[in-house]
Image (tube, rainbow, N blue to C red; front, top):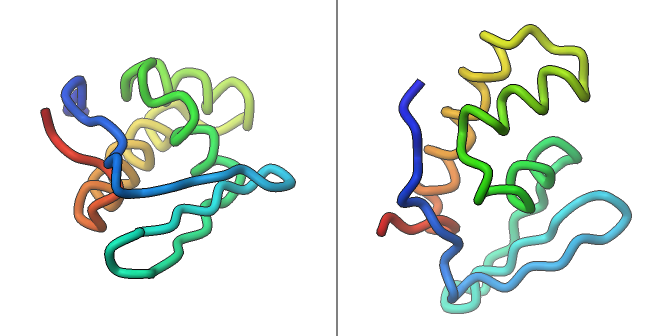
Length: 88
């Protein structure tokens, strides 16, 4: 899995967690994205890095580590493509 140490939240995206789900608001576009419980965990713990996120998700949600690694990497890429995360 590729680490994403340079990914950071886009300051133009506002967010709030409500009942275990994060709601991302893309301020410029006026679009909204709702993250499920695991997506919210990733969003709230980005600073841990992809490998630690996968390990923690694997343990917390009883998912095979390899599957968690792939899912975290894909999810981070999706957030980057959507503009929620920026590189650098």
